[in-house]
Amino acid sequence: MIHSLFLINASGDIFLEKHWKSVVSRSVCDYFFEALERATEPENVPPVIPTPHHFLINVLRHRIYFVAVIQSEVPPLFVIEFLHRVVDTFQDYFGVCTEAAIKDNVVVVYELLEEMLDNGFPLATESNILKELIKPPTILRTVVNTITGSTNVGEQLPTGQLSVVPWRRTGVKYTNNEAYFDVVEEIDAIIDKSGSTITAEIQGVVDACVKLTGMPDLTLSFMNPRLLDDVSFHPCVRFKRWEAERILSFIPPDGNFRLLSYHVSSQNLVAIPVYVKHNISFREGSSQGRFELTLGPKQTMGKAVESVLVSSQLPRGVLNANLNPSQGTYTFDPVTKLLSWDVGKINPQKLPSLKGSMSLQTGASKPDENPTINIQFKIQQLAISGLKVNRLDMYGEKYKPFKGIKYMTKAGKFQNDCHLLVIQKLAG
Image 1 (cartoon, rainbow, N blue to C red):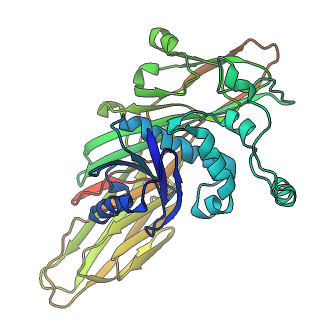
Image 2 (tube, rainbow, N blue to C red):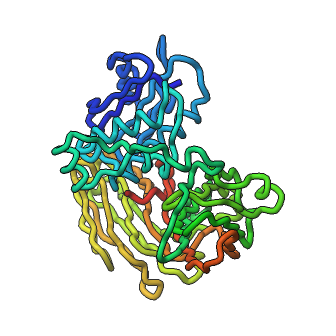
């Protein structure tokens, strides 16, 4: 299925390649570089790029392009899912998935790729199985391997590989048994100047960290599961029970994993948690312009809006901006014309505002008075869709585990559109 894999950094350099069936020349990536040049943004590169003899399927994660080379037609989402699994595995092993981390652990990277694909087809992609096959790198293990010439490859076949639940290893034991679930939602929205919502949707995930002894069987129920559209589950979830009862029943993997991801597209269910009032004006024949912007919370259920960052691409004719923020700090880059305002936490009693004047080029025509405004934010302990966990039960084991649920809403990502207010993805 997958013949080769190329890892390309933000500078366009191929810093790692792996071949399974046959060696494919690096020149095949020229088609990818051409598509990258045509893209207006790094994330706008087409995920599937046809070439005369191959298909290039790529994903962008952590400023690294993972480019798979396919010779025959295969379901592209299957390859994309595998590439995301590769990235998640690197992050699980090395803590971060960066070019430096991959280069520092290049031997382990090649060992992992060799186990994850067998002759181009996915074989072992579950973290628990891989960690028994390939031991995660540590300083001590690296020193021992250097001295003795040994590798991180395990000597025994993973116990989970032969069981009916390959995502969970056998014989798991913990002193403290605990299960934590994080409900994280990203809201994408386009709002016009009057405050009316043009489009809005929510992308959500439920991430889990489960450290339980033995082979527990868990059930997780929601108060309002009908909210969820387009749900994608971890393989451990029993899909038939979800279809019949809207209850998640599963034997969890050991450690961190993504239990499900979902989509809420009904616009009447998407509450916009912040509002912006802005007035940007320029006078014909004048070298000065006026800038006024105010932020405030909206439909946040009393929760604080934190880590607020506002950015706007001002018109090219603006030379400088002399603004006065009521809270936080702002910067204006006279070269790129990017205005950034780091607001921090919104106080509902005293709404943050940014007001002042802008200097224009002499003789320049009247600029656009409606530049796009992008907002980034976080709201702790709130799922903006209204999704709530009802209860979590455990069967098959006699101990009583500690259970915790955490909610968070943050700004998602939306393509910039002129004359509109855009809520954009929180960086990092």
